[in-house]
Length: 321
Image 1 (cartoon, rainbow, N blue to C red):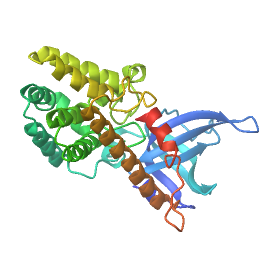
Image 2 (image 1 turned 30 degrees about the horizontal axis):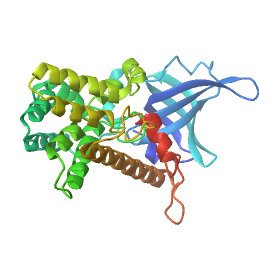
Image 3 (image 1 turned 90 degrees about the vertical axis):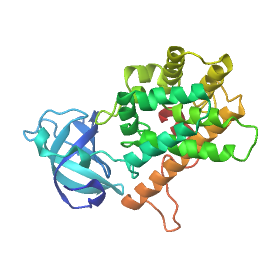
């Protein structure tokens, strides 16, 4: 396996990769060519197919696993794959574990931490709500534990959703400990449920793209609907328990600009939104620095130039979280 993070200028490419994107473009000469992004669990490399009708280029689409032959070149200080031959790979030719990044944390350990947070919730109704999603519904639990946290921006890897959820809950709990008038049960419950609908907003790997309902409604509205429906099924919730929890979900992006239908109007909602935002931003920074080290984009002072750095953090969250 020629992992992408190990490729260098001048390498001959003979390996199977996952086609992340494929698009057609036209050169200045008027000739059409393909732009493709090839990926494995270590990264992404842009590729070009300059002769789309060459006999060595077979039909393929985004999402396929393809065997590629070509050369690795440097263009504008970026590695690029010049693809000469390409065919769709057979299923028995590759191991999918080589192609999708996975959380560095053990999934079983994260599942245990999830259960421990649920056990902390003393409010009977919130506790049974969390159990209904994460313990009683085995299919949903498995989806949640395996799902990515976003399509691209942060935690966009297998088990990224549960990693982000636990980190958000830890941060929110830590902030809550500094004040004696915060409803900790509400904070923990909202933190665990805030991104619950990402399992429906984004299709799991290898697709890793927005579903129709994800595009049309987004995970905030979908999450509100999922939690509200479950509350109605379980029964016994007071009006204030229901409205405060649903408000935390609706406001967890913190502003209208970032897609929240409501601004945080409760201290608990504000804490959840800040914890969510902090974990997302720090993960973006961590991933940016890691990618910079791999592709040698870090300057001599240790600074990184990247589209998710600085002021564009706001834009990246709005468009992709």
